[in-house]
Image 1 (cartoon, rainbow, N blue to C red):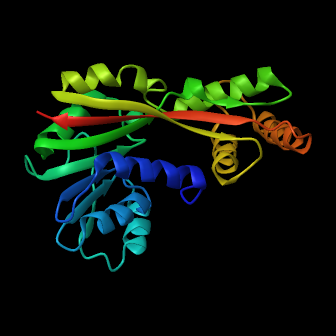
Image 2: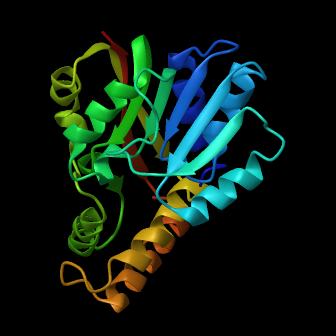
Image 3: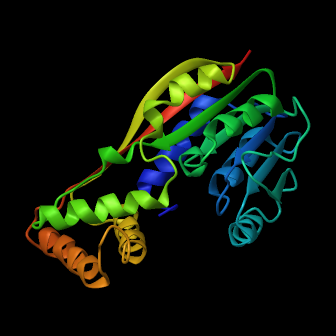
Length: 242
């Protein structure tokens, strides 16, 4: 999924909005397997630095392996609500698909504000999961499965309140824009997401393993008929610290 055209395009847009310069210090909150950190390390060059955090040691190991040889990149275990860095440490930050998992998003945003230097900027990306559209013959079953999937989040509609939360944290909101992934046939992003959902939902929202498997079969049959449709919209917010 991280190597899919959709994910690569979104990372490219995040980097474009950040407009990193050689020698800058950038923070990657929730770095996952390190794809974005690796790319930002090239943006800031050997004179810059990338500090990345994640709560998952497994992800950090993957990120370190991916960025082996990037001497300007370092990886740390940590939480978005307690960033392990001094005040005013960074010129820029990227926070992609993180705050929707954080119960106290306001505290996490306050931490982001604290570690950015005055005039520093950040790109915050989260998804409103009501935007998820997936064609299926059994629409009622699909609806129940997607609602059960919402349980993996602390905030399933966070972008609706992010402008207010960002301003409350002290940021100036520079720009906001959508990033939509749409596919008319199964591909790595939607296919990988389907597998994650089918593995997660059994036992949640009254969904059984049999229903999850039937939903997967429904998607495959829909694709075989040439009727596959998938769409999901993330929201990108570029902010500046006052």
